[in-house]
Length: 155
Ligand SMILES: CC(C)(COP(=O)(O)OP(=O)(O)OC[C@H]1O[C@@H](n2cnc3c(N)ncnc32)[C@H](O)[C@@H]1OP(=O)(O)O)[C@@H](O)C(=O)NCCC(=O)NCCS
Image (cartoon, rainbow, N blue to C red; front, side, top):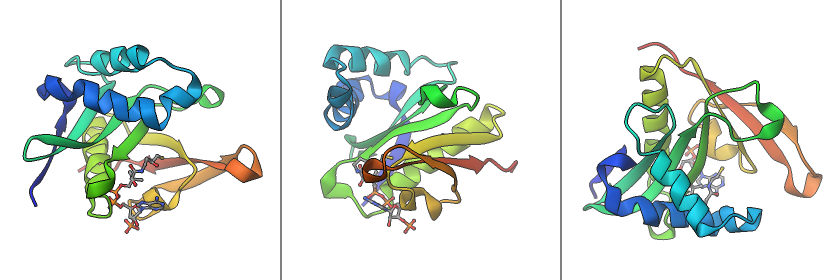
C-alpha cells in the first residue's frame, strides 16, 4: 500500500472531501455550515500562508487530512501554531497514516522556522507515541480535553 501525504493545494479536487470530513466530524456540532468549512479549507490552500491543509492519498484517492492553523482554542491564544482536524477514513485506520500526516505538519512548521506546535484532544494517546506531551487538561470530567505540545528540533 503506497500512501502519499502532500499539501492539499496540489489536489484541488480533494478540497470538498477533506472539508466534509471536518464538517461531519466536528463542524456541524459547533453549528458551522458546510460552506463555511469549505471556504476555510480553500483559504488554507494558498501557497505562502503558514495556515495549510494537508491530504493523505492512496492511488490519488483522499483518505485523510490534517491542518496547520494559527490558533485552535480561544482560551489559549498565547500559543501558536496548532495542529488540528486530524482525520483518517475508517477503512484506512491503524496503518500509521495519522502518524504520517502529523509528521508532515511538523516538517512544514519546522521549515517555516517554528519551534513548537500545539493541539488539543480528548485522546492524548494518539500523539504521545509521536513525541507530544500533555501540558494541562481542561473541561468537564466526562469530556476532558488535553492541551499538548511538541518541540520541533532543528534537523
Ligand atoms: C484518530 C485517527 C486520526 C487515527 O488515525 P490512524 O491513521 O488510525 O492512526 P495511526 O495508525 O497513525 O496511529 C497513530 C497512533 O495513534 C494511536 N491511536 C489511533 N487511534 C486512536 C484512538 N482512537 N485513540 C487513542 N489512540 C489512537 C495508535 O495506537 C498509534 O499510537 P502509537 O504511535 O503509540 O502506536 C483516526 O482514528 C480518526 O480519524 N478518528 C476520527 C477523528 C479523530 O478522532 N481525530 C483526532 C482528533 S484529536
